[in-house]
Image (cartoon, rainbow, N blue to C red; front, top):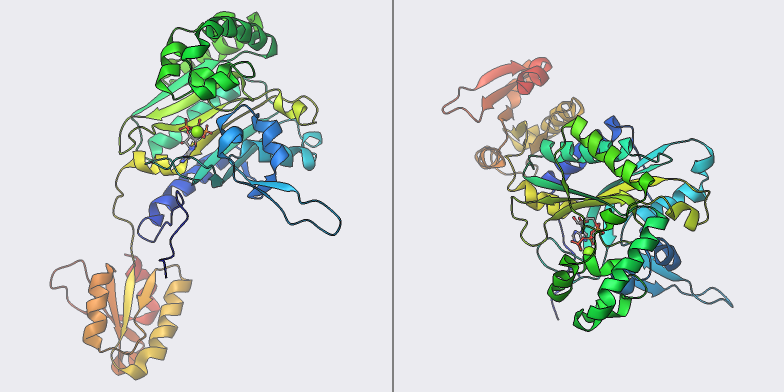
Length: 423
Ligand code: ATP
Ligand code: MG
């Protein structure tokens, strides 16, 4: 029989590695909540139409990366087309509209964290199931909140030890700017169409901006000479972009203006940003985080016009950028029984210590004291605690500090044990 394995591009995360995930997730949650965001959880599966309309059909994601299937049909009905979510923004907007959050508060700040699915070619930092942590703000037109979001992100990366990063910003302008820019871009690209990649040729008329975001070398070469969207901004768009820059300056957040930054999703307007990492084990997949403003999406999906901005951070890539882990905090104590009949007393004591918040392990299989103490040594626990007949009658325990060479065994009253093991 063939060995059972994970689906290509999807990974297990085992103990030993998961601790770094927890650290990252906790840091993200804590920071997001300090900045006034609340968590939202949406289903992993949505109606395909949500992504087609929300992300845009002429994008890599919708065009070729989605896991879509037809659900089993009910009696006399045809099955619905469903998709494993490839990103979080469209689902958040759907939830925002479905629950009429719009009518309840002027500004909404949400964060999410979870797996996303894209049928991409797997590589280091590129998987078919990967995790994103993201933030969305509804109801604030910016530019101050745009800068705050970017600054919050840079702060998170710094907290996790990722300081060698580059923040790229650009503005795509609003609807009128985009129409004018689109025409100029098309005028530049059409005579060069034959030299573009197949994908870009196919999408040229529908979405010429995508050519600028293409990873194909021949497209990148042509994109380098293309007109710059910043030269087409309306006065309002330009003022918004200046406001973003001035606020980032005031916050002391370094950034680079990258006029060719467009990014993969169709829905962006005005502010666009990407954070790239340079250190760690990132390699070619160096985009840690992408984000931008999408002021038109909520109206397009049937809501009343509401400005919005968000970002999504790739967790696996951030873990690569973080480099190898520091030593994790391990067990506080390993409890051992002198004799087999001392095991129930060991369990009672272990429960008390665990209830008090200590990390405690025991070996309940019935091995000799010597073998239990060998496991205590290997476990990396700070203390070994032994209970025998004498200790039980006296209400004490024998405690050895495993991090000290030739440490003496101390007899400690059980009532003082929690304090002693916390030391
Ligand atoms: P890329 O240009 O690398 O394909 P993207 O533009 O498709 O990225 P977004 O959709 O903006 O990426 O997603 C935000 C972040 O999610 C990325 O910056 C990256 O860190 C992460 N990410 C995207 N796709 C993958 C993937 N297939 N595997 C792992 N992480 C990913
Ligand atoms: Mg991609």
